[in-house]
Image (cartoon, rainbow, N blue to C red):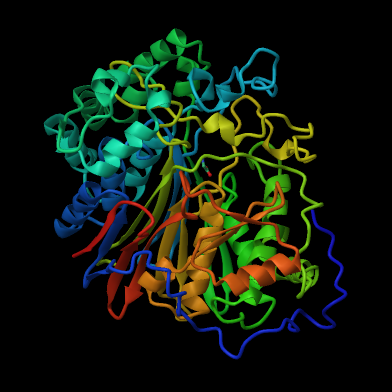
Length: 572
Ligand code: GLY
C-alpha cells in the first residue's frame, strides 16, 4: 500500500495548477475517431451491446413488455451465439442492477478455480507459459449459465424459455457472418485451431468468410437443454458430462464435482459518491468497483479538474490510476478467501492521503507497486434501461478472445482462460522486480481477481444518469473512470465522452499509454514530468478500452457504443 506523505499541499489537495474551467471536448484536429458515429435515442428504454443482432434481441424483449433484466439476460445468451469471442456460456462475469424502487443488487457469476488447482500449477517445471491462457488447464469453472438464470429468477418477468429462445433461433437458423466476426476468428486462428471448434470456425483452415450463413447446431441443442431443464443440465446433466469429457481429453482439471458445486453469489453493491453523484459499482472479487471509486475519490480531492486536453489533467488522471492500481494489485482478491479492506480503499480520507502523495509537477515512480498481473483484453458489456425505471449494467467474459481456445465437443461453446487472472507466481519477483500478490494466489475453489467494472451513476436527485462498462482487462477501470469524468466534470455529451482520447497507467512496468489524440505539447510536458510514455501498439491494440453506456437524456435515454469496437445501441 502507498504510504501518504504530502509535502506539496498544506490543506487538502487544492493547490494543483489548473485552468479556469473543467469543461471541454475540443479534441485535437487529427482525432477523427467516431467522428461520424451517432448516439441512439429512445423515449422508453435503451439497449447497448457489442453485437447488433444481440442488441435487437434486447430491444424486442423490451418492446414486448419485458424489463431490463429480461433484456440483459436474453442479450447475454444471444452474445454467446453471435459474439463468441467474448459472449459466452463457458465463462462468467458480474451484473449490477438498479431497480425503479431505488434498490440495487450485484451478482457475482465469476468463474472459480477447480478443486484440483494448485498454487504452483503454472510455475512448475515443464509447464509452458501459455498453459494459463491456452488449452484445458486455463479454464475456471464457468458461472455464466448459473448467473443468468439466477438473475432471471430473481428479477425477470419473462420465462427462461422466452429469454433463451432468440439465442436458440440465432444458433439454429444461423446468421450472416460480418467482417468483424470473420476478422476476430482469423486473429485467433492459432488459439482455435487445435480444438474442436476448428471445423466450425476455421473450415478448410481459414476463418469463416463474411457473407456466410453461420449455423451452430450443437450450441442450439445446448441452449435448448438449458431452456428446457435450467442450470441443472449445465452443472449436473448432459452438458456437464460433455464438459468433463472435454477436460479428460485435454488433461484439464474441471470435474463433475466442480460443476455440481458451482454457485453464483449475490453481493452487496459498492456505493460511493463523486461530486454529488452516487457511483454504484461491483464489489470484490472484481477489483472494478473499488478501483473506479478509488480513482474518482483521488480526483475529487483536487477540486475542479484542469480542462480536458491539458497535460495537468492527464497527469492527475494518471497519478490517480497509478495509486488505485497499486492497491488493487496488492490487496484485492477473492473476498471469500481472505478479507479485503474495501472500506479503507474506497474512503474519502484514504483518497485524500493518496492525493497528497501526488507531486503537481512530477510523475511518481511505481516503486511501491508489488504485483503485476497480465490480463486478457477481451470481454463484453451490456447496458439496458427499461421503461419501468430499471437499469442493468452487465459485463461478461471468457478472458482472452475465444477464451482458452478449447471448444466443448458436442456442446458447441468455448471455455474461458480465466485461470490467467490469478497471480501465477505469488511471492516471486517477475522480470520487473515486482512481487506478485498473495491475495490473488491460486487456490482450490477460489475466485480469480477481475477488472470488470459494471457501473451505474446516479445524479444529485438520485435518478440514474449513466450505466456504463467496458472490455479491456485493467483498461476497463481506466476507461470507465474517463467516461464518467468526461460526463460529470467536462460536461461532454455521451458520444463526445466516448470519443475522447484516453490514457492508461500500466503501473508495472512503470509506463503510461496514450491514444493518439493528444497534442504533441501535452505529451512533451508529461515526458518532462517523468512519465515513461509508451505509444500503444497500433497493430493489435490501437485503442484503450471499449466502453458501452446508456445515459439519461431528458425523460428518455441515449445509448452509445464505443466507436473503438463493434456493436450497436438501440432505443424503444
Ligand atoms: N478477464 C478480465 C477481467 O476479468 O478483468
